[in-house]
Amino acid sequence: MEDVQICNFEDVDLKNATVIAGFPSIGLVSTIAANYLIDAINLKQIGCVTSSQFPALSVVHTGEPLSPVRIYAGTQPGGKKIVQKVEDLFGAMGKNVEDTKEVLKQYGNMSSATVLYVLERFMDRNPSKGDIGLMLSFGPGFSAQRILLKW
Image (cartoon, rainbow, N blue to C red):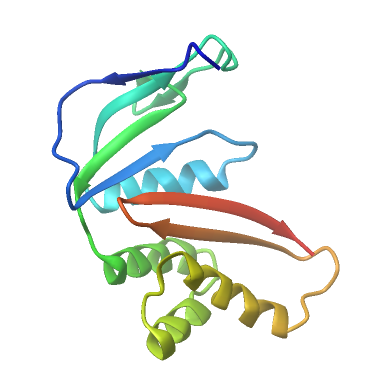
């Protein structure tokens, strides 16, 4: 996609910064989680990504139209704060992040590998066929990924 462009709304020193690139997906869980984190850790939109290859759609948030692919930045909130915010959000839905907290307690933050240790704990409980889970991963720089899992 040669025509992909990054539009900067303001220049930000991204050293030790938090950056989340928000990509829309089917369903609302990822949108709700991303918006919650953006608000909870006080991020500001600093840019967007455009391309004629993207589907023709727009996002409306608090009455303002937004690009479907946005870039946010803020000061680094740290892993513990992110885990607490995710726990606050999903705890209200009856979910927990106990496996995440236990892996971090046992091994510390292992960067990208941490999510695999948490996934292993879920797999050890032999989820039932058809069970659905949401795997969230937050990385350096700061990046956020999400995967919808179905067993």
